[in-house]
Image (cartoon, rainbow, N blue to C red; front, side, top):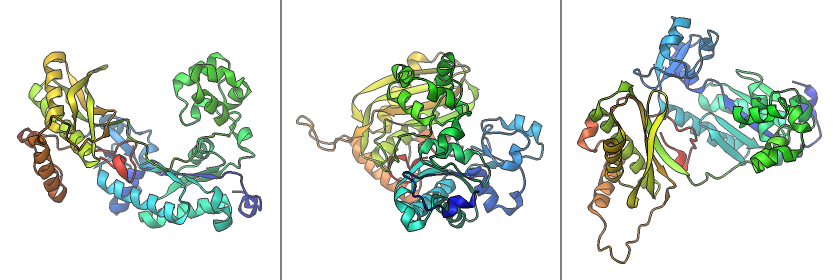
Amino acid sequence: MSPALDRCPRLWPRAIIHMDMNAFFAAVEQRDDPDLRGRPVAVTNGLQGTCIITCSYEARTFGIHTGMRLTAARRLCPALVQRPARPRVYARVSAAIMTALRDRVSPDMEVFSVDEAFLDVTRCQRLHGTPLRMARMVKAIVREVSGGLSCSVGVSGDKTTAKFAAKLEKPDGLTVIPPWEARERLRDIPVTALCGVAEGIGRYLARHGARTCGDVAALPVSVLARRFGNLGRRIWLMCQGRDPDRIHLDTPPPKSLGHGKVVPPATRDRALLLTYLQHMSEKVATRLRRHELEAQVFFIGLRGESAWLGERLQTAVPVCDGGAIFALCRDFMDRAWHNEPVFQVQVTALAPRPRRLQLTLFEETASPSDALNVVMDEINRCYGEFTIAPARLLQRSTMPDVIAPAWKPAGHRQSL
């Protein structure tokens, strides 16, 4: 790292730090079990899980990666150690890290996922010093609060370039791309290496002769704007190190709330599938009630060998009751499923809205299910999820919950 960046008197017009934990779940397992340190570790969703959620850097040297099946990974590394995921532990560690960074570095912070965050430190330069010095603060605070875990940090003048910089040196890296150098540093980078630029966008740009960030920056902005609208304009600026996207401090209202689970491969057992669907229906309903939301439209889905079989189904009125949601699941199974092999189930509330607590003109009393849910939620909060539940759920999957991709340490996103 250039010493000049550490003592540079020049204030950056905008300074963004991206913090990315290194192999987060596997690192927590190695932290808590000293026997795992220095060994190849794969984290799966429970001991029954066959798909790797994440793996340690020792495992990655063998070519093992997230999404790989455990059997294939063990062919590459017979000494691979499997550990079942502990999502609540990971969530607690993440929440402690995010709180410390917000309190001690900058309040202008966006939690991007359970192991990533953006910090806008523009207004902190006179308080804490240079962006490089604050990046070192971030690494030190993460290590302190997490009990010794490492992170990689990228620093630049915009979110996209900062996130790209954080990927350049892993694990435990720190890369600074000053905003006045960003355009040149990105010039020869494939545009699909930038966060948010999917392969489909990359193929469209390639048809216009643009494969690198420099190629895209040389295009008229209208080429992207005509095809992608505001997103196209943003991509054009991202390729120049000028991503205009701001730090999002507030958790936006949810567009959907859903839960899914992998079932035993190629399941054709109707009773078992109904158990999984009722499990997911109750989880969705509980989460809606916890955040005083309700929904009227639900997606019910079964993943087959090559595609999803699913429908959007609607209740007569907005609901947050697991029984009402499960009734839609039963109807869907009766009509749409014809004994095809199933690998995963999904239940999602679409467009949830604030719950209507006041009765309408012609409603004399709340439904019996409302009173039952109040009591059930209170008991389950005290004694654990599904202490009281429909009898069918005695046969529910023992595989643990997973952390939602859009996890946040507060609000409706704090969910497993």
